[in-house]
Image (cartoon, rainbow, N blue to C red; front, side, top):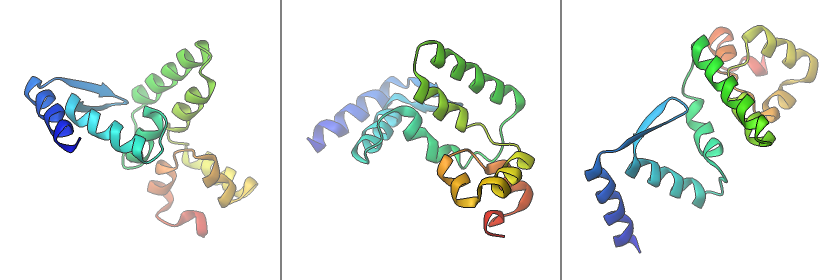
Length: 131
């Protein structure tokens, strides 16, 4: 089985095909590896697999936010409401709104919602939720 996996990755690395997902480009072999590892960890779709990596993307341009929003709208039109919500949550919450939500609902609830808080962390500093 391990040998088959190595051969599949080698085959796709020779093809040198790259694909884009949520602004990230990777080879088909890399994508297969990520999907297989994500599946082993119990992640059910590409948005769940992508989410932890999106935390490292500290900012998103307005065009990128708009594009993600448009993808979410299309998913809603297709009846994929959970996928659309997960995609919407990948858009960084504006710092002022994150601060308001922390005050209104509490840090624990804000974290449980899964919204991207990277812009708030960049503006208010690490640990801002516990201050």
